Length: 114
Length: 115
Image (cartoon, rainbow over all chains, first blue to last red; front, side, top):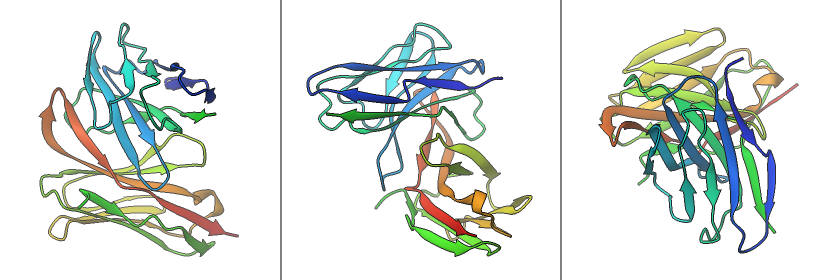
């Protein structure tokens, strides 16, 4: 079945640590996205990538980094520079069609800072 | 002012009731309107997709767009306990910036259907 997988489901981080969240898709989508979800704030875009080896900052990129070495994979690193990283992180993908930009989402990773 | 406003609820109704979920927006360029359903601790799934104004029906769900009032709604008929979830509205315009269409989400409304 086609879809998006994210791992791990739960992640705990100590202060000062970098952690990497995995996102893989087998939908053959060109575009991939990372969102952060906090209670009462909806989804906020962190980074997105339209093509391999290229990515763009979203609305809240500070303290995060990404890479896009393969079409199927778009890992997100939460660095120690991110001051409030506890949140639910969602990876999404879409075609490059211009019709609306609807996203397919993965199951999410819940990151907690200890 | 946020581009998209959505009442966060929570909203609790008895089984079988008609549910109305709403969003307002300020950007008149929005042309595509979506509703996502998100179960607890899961990723959102696309529920309804509408282009421009009008109504769209899919089973017990109806999406309504009123561009003149900048107002969109999702109606759920004969609501079931399995409809209990957070519902997020989302919208975008045709403009492509740095290769992507911007998709703006509402805050989400948490809905509970009581048996």
